[in-house]
Image 1 (cartoon, rainbow, N blue to C red):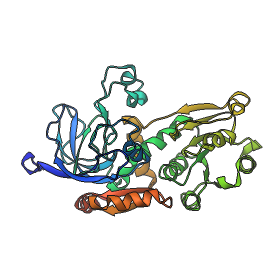
Image 2 (cartoon, rainbow, N blue to C red):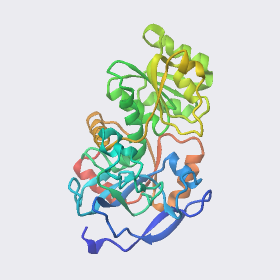
Image 3 (spheres, rainbow, N blue to C red):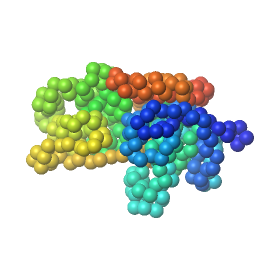
Image 4 (spheres, one colour):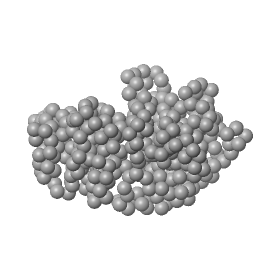
Length: 368
């Protein structure tokens, strides 16, 4: 797409007031690119739990702000110092915008670069995001898509995928060892189950919804546990299924329920690790888990650039799929929100912004 073909204005779904419904506004297409920026013609934008936090004012976002930090599309313009991406590349948009490149996190190790404290912002969280026809993203944080990975998968992978992929890596588990996901049937959980299986791990999934339990089973968990049976019954069921009746080697907490983190620690063997992903106001764990059983708790954010690339390579190799609930067109945002808040959703809710891009990618064999 030549600069002359890029329109001056576009439609965008925006948070205009905190705790109020989204508004669809006509706003300028980003025209001023910094040296490391790319302009992406959005194909698919995905909803994430963080979007509701933005709408609630949790991050103090300056309004109006275009929503969604999970997007995929085609590069239509690049900044002066962009070398790894070019016009026409299919990409999964990066969330961090303009990390400083100078702080301790930016300087390494590489898998800590996403923690930059002097960053300009996070797209769809503190700066304009992907619920629009075009979005400006940072090329250094964005990831070129393998031909086999579709826009429909790549959009929710931008946050949900990057987050749960990194959580599995952070456990440090080896093939054959056991991992448990608490909240296994949600948008992150069903991806985590597949990632862990692809890496050769044995997987336990815990969920408290019929829909979540069904999705956990569908995607291949070795043991599916109903949280509604209670902590004591859950612990016994998992210990009975694991070697030495010790429990899983590591766990990942994806659910925000008050009891979720404590349950994750309880089903983890003594001296094991729990990775905390969910973001409740307070993470509550009984002291006995930490002190008497030496459970180590490790927080984790989204993947770095190199971790993101390894995730997409894994998806292309193993045929991992994303469960999506598709809404076609920006005008469908109210229907999407209604589904998300209805509590019955399986997987991720996405808006197809540009159907033509989805048709075009079929020609190169995008199927996962």
